[in-house]
Image 1 (cartoon, one colour):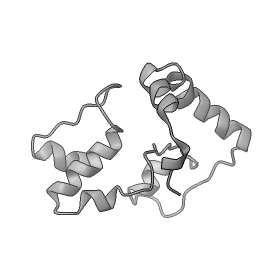
Image 2 (cartoon, one colour; image 1 turned 45 degrees about the vertical axis):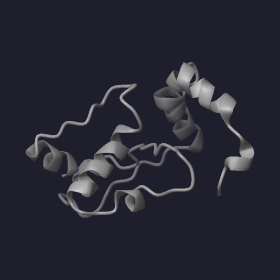
Image 3 (cartoon, helix red, strand yellow; image 1 turned 180 degrees about the horizontal axis):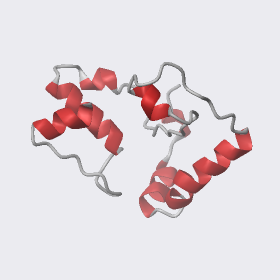
Image 4 (cartoon, helix red, strand yellow; image 1 turned 135 degrees about the vertical axis):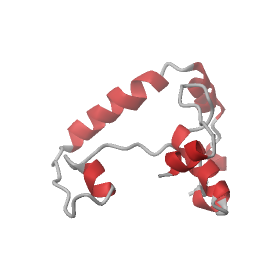
Length: 113
């Protein structure tokens, strides 16, 4: 729905690696601003992080769009979830120079919990 709103206003958010912070976060911020929400509040968290999504239901899109009332869950093992995350996100980032630079600049005392 947020993407539909942005498209109706002629707003396109880039979706390729290197376009900036998380594409999803930029979509939420832009749509939130258009709707008059405090986008900083919508996106507030104690440290910069990505949110990783793994569908745990076979028909998750239908459930999230209200087309079915009960999701049918898939019971992945912890190992399967970790392997999925490694393949989908970790492998690409562990060799990315910008990510490596941020890790090397990390100061534990600046980490807020």
